[in-house]
Image (tube, rainbow, N blue to C red; front, side, top):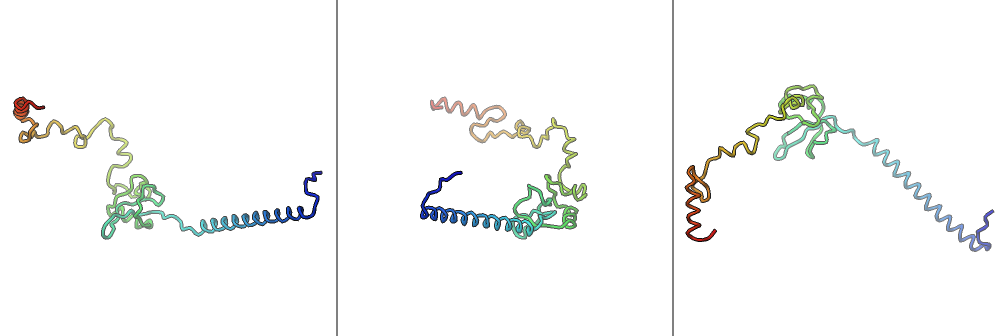
Length: 173
């Protein structure tokens, strides 16, 4: 048997007090953790359910609605309010835009009322076709030439020739 305890009474009482203090600290910590767990469980039980549908609001006077989102949509902005199913359907039917990420128009069975192509339409679009109005290089050949500004050439290149002659006469680049 282990008998590593001190032989005198005074040191044994000191160890007993020291262990009693540790037991009190441990008991206090256990009570604190239990209290926090019950508060967390009570908070989860009392937390309101997330809304089924939300409307993202714009900025400015009156904060007009901008988009309809599902309640769990990650793309909904900070300015939003909860709406019920009927109001979300009414807003979509009135022409309010549906979120392209959560697709509330599809979930609410409101079809062909939102802006933009649906997922099926965008999947059918050929990837090698380019809209000329969106291309940054489509317009570069048709820009008007500015002969009135130095360094720009007119149709015959006269402005560039005038600039080159001026540089050669002055001797500076």
